[in-house]
Amino acid sequence: MSETVNSKQKLREICRIAARVFYEKGYDGASMQDIAKAVGLTKAGLYHHVGSKDRLLFEIMNYGMDILDEDVLEKIKGIEDPCEKLRQTIIRHIDLVVRARDLEITVILHENRSLKGALRKKINARKKSYIYYLEDLIAQVQECSGRKPLISPTLAAFNLLGIINWLYQWYRPEGAIGQSELTQACVDFFFRGLLGGAALPSPPSGT
Image (cartoon, rainbow, N blue to C red; front, top):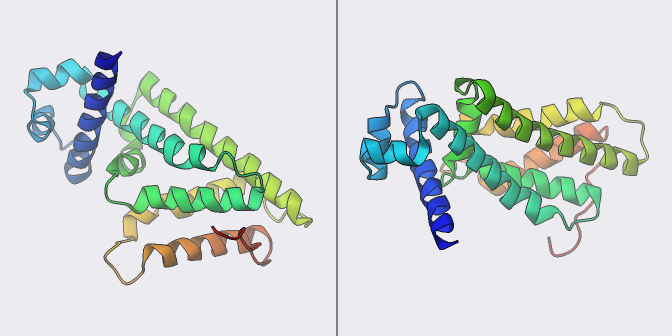
């Protein structure tokens, strides 16, 4: 059991470091030797853990989706109010994209087209599952509002992902806009568009 845990931890460590190499050099520009050196392994040792460069990219993306599950979906699954659940989903997803310590998420966004075949299908299946989750939650928020929907849950979900997933291209945490200001602006912008200009219901006290 401990050997399995240690192996998983080692793979995650490799993924975190390799993600930064891919981010800096691009998938095509980064060699397995570059990654092995950054990780502190021989090239043969790296291949022992990941098998191939394609497999390593898959593992990084898969780990990124694990982080999304652990830091977003698991943390908000106990929230019953649809509006608050969607609000917290947006807040936590933005945090994943803009925080510097988890570039695995950025690699998912930036190198998606580099993954091919069956491995790409596996990652896309996990992404679709998250999209379906957003569509369902958005539909619940629209129903609770009592208003006629202005946009389909599918279009709203993809618009939301477009807002969040593009942040890594322009947002700089050290810049003039703080993360809390950025997050509040994104939440307000999305909810007002979704609900036709209606204000976002106030979150429960203590959040």
